[in-house]
Amino acid sequence: MQRRRYTHPPARNLLAMPVPPVIEWRDGAVRILDQRRLPDAVEVLHCTTVEQVNEAIRTLAIRGAPALGVAAAYAVALAATRVDAPDETTYLERLDHVIDQVIATRPTAVNLAWAAERLRTAAREQPENDIRAIRTSLLDLAHEIAADNEQRHRALAEAGADLFASGQRVLHHCNTGPLATAASYGTALGVLQAANQRHGIEVVVSETRPLLQGGRLTTWELAQWGVPFTLITDSMAADRMRRGHIDAVIVGADRIAANGDVANKIGTYSHAVAAGAHDLPFYVAAPLSTIDFDTPNGDAIPIEERATEEVHGYGDWRWSPSDAPVANPAFDVTPHQRITAIITEHGVHRPPYLESLRRFAAAPDAAA
Ligand code: MRU
Image 1 (cartoon, helix red, strand yellow):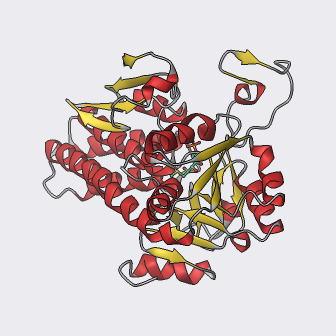
Image 2: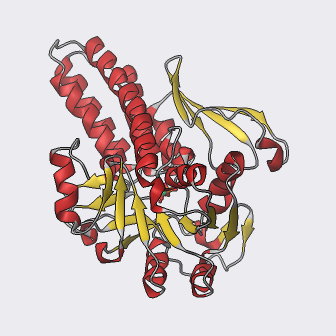
């Protein structure tokens, strides 16, 4: 995999630079902005094989549920151009195997499997019995998923913006901006960007241990937009609430079960419990593609367990004995009872979620 380095100035200078797309298809390859290096450097990975895209997904070079959906779609489209077979049946079998590998890269964010399965279905339904036609239709569908992402997130940001009033301080966890959606707007951060444009708000950014998506990525995006923010460590949130320095909480989601239980970045549940204890609203923002109607509740959501090194230290710094026992679940589940509302591209959904979400799956154009 080629790594193209655009620059390596101090982080502050990067704010003034044009940022390459989070992911794009160019010249028969997938190019991915390497989020592991942000905000210190803007580097682009040039992936010519599906294994390279899978590695970029596993190691969080690209991350965030909606962006993972786009990455999965392009990974499968790329594989479709590389897989060879003597006949269509063997081709589809080989492609199936690759799709399973793409889906296995990260188990919690349902958008990834959702996109990969859409391409699997499209490959099987291709009427022309022709491998070249399958390749073209899968790439077209991957482009369609990427473009659709753009419209959905714009609508979602607009739908949630008026939940917040002028001057409110809103706690946000992890990173849910364009870096996480591969679109111009994010999910929770898109809502806050739109709320700031309309009313003027302030974001309280929790740094998000262990991989610091809040501290590294959310601060970087907010600084580029000129949205006022304060960065805190995750453990400061409850104290800020008790002192009256936080008015509401908003997060994204990696998977929403049919009953409204939400899997999101580890630490989300702690913020929800603290918000409940201080009578603060707790909002979740996600596109409909993040809702998994086949998963009845949060207990059935698979939670990704990541490498122990991520908790032992960060970068080159190790702060614990290398054999210290470690737990590292990447996500937690917030029960639906703790969620004030779920914002999708179709509006603001209130409890009971089983009914309000299912209504939109059936008739997405109905009013919220
Ligand atoms: O492990 P990550 O960085 O992929 O986790 C991302 C999150 O948990 C986000 O909050 C979620 O995907 C929503 S992104 C719009």
